[in-house]
Image (cartoon, rainbow, N blue to C red; front, side, top):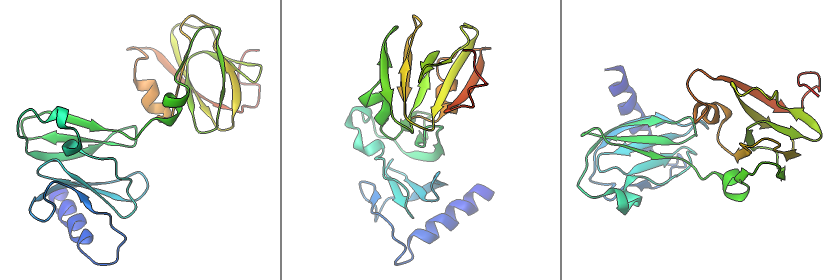
Length: 202
């Protein structure tokens, strides 16, 4: 019931004039019912329509929606809920249980991606590095296979991936990277560059 009231309140907000809204990404925005809404990480609102369209309002980033992916539309769907992802996107949930994930483009992965063992690259600030690496000549690794390490690049730096697994570079939030592929029961270490140089083995 509380969620229903929240959806109605958010829906009421978007019909008020001069609020800087963007057009709803729905096939029939004037006819398709609003079924759910969530706040975005930057203070905006995503509104889910029954046909799978998603409206971006109050500064929310328009990421597209189910109806922008013809490859998903093998049978008609009706949607009932929308939930946030760790990657600053959302999941649309159909009445039959199917889930469709929409995440923003990953600039760091697209432009840099996977670094092979022994390889190196210049990493800009704002990217995350997943794997045991050396950054700026400092060892950001412990050679421990039971840990999964994600380094947040607060400043740019030159990295080297010395081990066989190499390293992945992504724009995704560190918590999301750590949750993806680190393995069950593995300790996750999230570190930051630059460090005070005293946190890591040299």
